[in-house]
Length: 570
Image 1 (cartoon, rainbow, N blue to C red):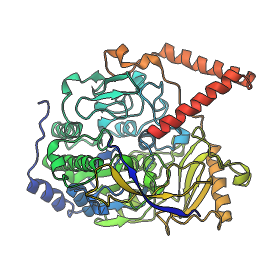
Image 2 (cartoon, helix red, strand yellow; image 1 turned 45 degrees about the vertical axis):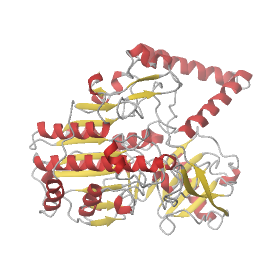
Image 3 (cartoon, rainbow, N blue to C red; image 1 turned 60 degrees about the horizontal axis):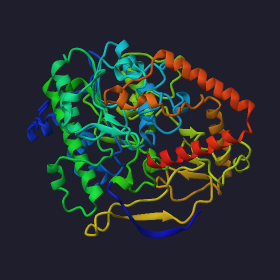
Image 4 (cartoon, rainbow, N blue to C red; image 1 turned 90 degrees about the vertical axis):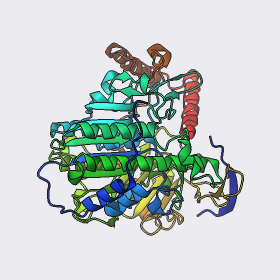
């Protein structure tokens, strides 16, 4: 619909406890390959479940997608298992993690907007039964290593209160890989590495990717393979800041783009961490009865070294580059291995799928949006999923050219929303930056340049694509197929009628790490929570009585401005 303005160059500003026990290559490379050819008969006991989640890894940033980054472990595990090439996640951190652990869309948890920031009195709703809690009911030992990012303002929000027997990792969204410091604004900085519910000051200085892989190996070494295990490894890698041990940087020294060079080193280090976890599974007797799931959490951040080529868009957008995920399943228990699956799968599907594998049950009363997709993955059957609600975010900046009239009176197209039904995908409002950003083409050019294909202008609020025929979203069919647009707008309206109010509270000054000994951690009590709820109710009541007060309009303006700035930063 829009003409391309050609190619332009855009400057990129690149922005002792546990030893790293490297396994011998032969032991790692040969073990899983041999085991994957064993019989896939039903196990005599529930399988061990290992879920590995990476942070900000782009669609193009894995070897089997033709990347210039070396990921031999991921390539081998995917080749011997089932590659998920119609797999969807969410465009930013908190939403993907919340949907993984609840099996519910964001509109059904109140987390439709943005992420949970460190100073917000917000967390994964306490009335939700999480995936690890369900697995505990089925007799599993549950352990988490890595990034939480689902809120921590109350102790009840912590991983060890939400179903995990043990936890080692960070509570916030991004920390320094060595010092574990995190700042949520100028002068609002604190330490964020926790062991259970205690601040782990003594582990500072360990590179997080190595630390987390070693903790996963220690968990396996100390657990009996006769008892079912759920191990959730949520790597911080490869989120910013771009930091990597020097030995990994050296192999990418010829990369002209500095951000890409650092990012590539981080990806390869993470790949070797997965290698060590896989080797530990075999060494300690878990592998033959295990299911390994690998997933990214959102699209790559292209201005920080990531690449989603040839998909459109980047992290934080609802284009395919923001929501199409890297994913595969590796297991001796798969009935049909060494193949690529085109079955439609969404991150909410892991909840009922893994509960089913564990021998547990789910029902309509659980209110899940996910489906059990194990038969589709293991046996190659059709996916029970036919549509995905990517999201409806009523707080995001409304599109200037959207309106209820433009949505045929069915839907206000100024609202940011995206939905996939069958082969069709509809986007409304402002989906985010819609550029195609190819791999670096000028290797010898000064390090901060990238080749960028851009749209000339955006003067619309509705897009329609046939994703099966046009996965790169280059041919907008909204004008040619108004019938399909109407149908998908109606589905958005249907979903919106089931949405609960957005929970995105203002920052609380009590959260400052200075009040918690210099570390991020819980700060609210039950009494403070009740006072906060009463305050919100009073504010809502005053707002209804004084709709036209000037100070209210001023506050609304700055709230929208803050939302825009935070969204751009994310």
